[in-house]
Length: 339
Ligand code: NAD
Ligand code: TYD
Image (cartoon, rainbow, N blue to C red):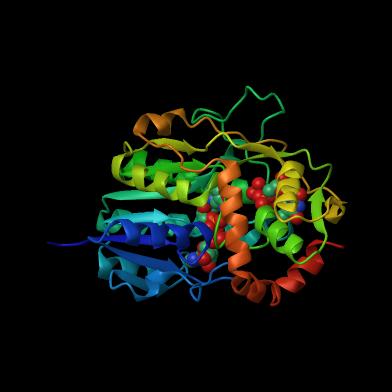
């Protein structure tokens, strides 16, 4: 029987890498192609077991390089595209927005053209709840798929722009697409520039944890494996052209998150250091996942079980994140923070 070919872009990153592992574990009848440029955020030397799997293939390429991408698509004739590759860190988008437009907007358009050219069965665009802007602190308000797009950061503006292109390729050319908009993820292999892995790694090392502003901003946290399961479901069952929000109702203030990590690791709250606020800092994100639940999705983790598993993973895999924080990351950290 012919095996379907699934192209995963950004499979050397945090969520894409977990998704590659998830798919190889679940399906033996798919070839999984991981296409990644290996930017600072991409790492294929990770301890993922899939490197030896005969269904796994790696391609090093830039999604914004039209000629190369067209050649790869013509050669491999992928059945599915699941598109994660992006510049993903809000703080970096504030200091250098240009690369976000190139990768997230132009790169997505190149992939859409290539997908249209060969006629893929599905293009899943992995987006973010940040395209909706932010909510106030009223706990009864949530982002739904009908919430207007009002991105506030260069990162979320670039993701919203790519969402609009994906939608347009469906409306104009009939490309079979879905867009998923997930809340903040956490879990294994999360790059330590983001709040949760940054906090865990610094607390383990008894270093100060920088909390922006007053720490009252709220994020809605989802374990990465629950996000992978959602994408798998949408890829197979999603109605073409539809958007699906992904979130598990795990809203926490940043201060609550940091204090939970400190408590679990048995350290002192004196490690918390309030630092100057992020520019344009979104107040609150919170997802209404009803539409996805109606498709059959249910998360396995809540915040308590997920954060305990994640902290344990960082304790067990210090080698992986040590190697990151001792490299080029040091320069980023010193430039970004003055503590
Ligand atoms: P990440 O930064 O960990 O990984 C991004 C990957 O994309 C890296 O492996 C990098 O090398 C690759 N990449 C970057 N530019 C590329 C290019 N030009 N060509 C090919 N590959 C390139 O990101 P992540 O946190 O895993 O996020 C993945 C996707 O999920 C992104 O599209 C992001 O917007 C979305 N998302 C993330 C979250 C979150 O909480 N992290 C939540 C919702 C949605
Ligand atoms: P982050 O992990 O960067 O995700 P996003 O900005 O995409 O939501 O940040 C999560 C929250 O944590 C956000 O409100 C900003 C805050 N934060 C800090 O307080 N200190 C930090 O050092 C970082 C990186 C983030």
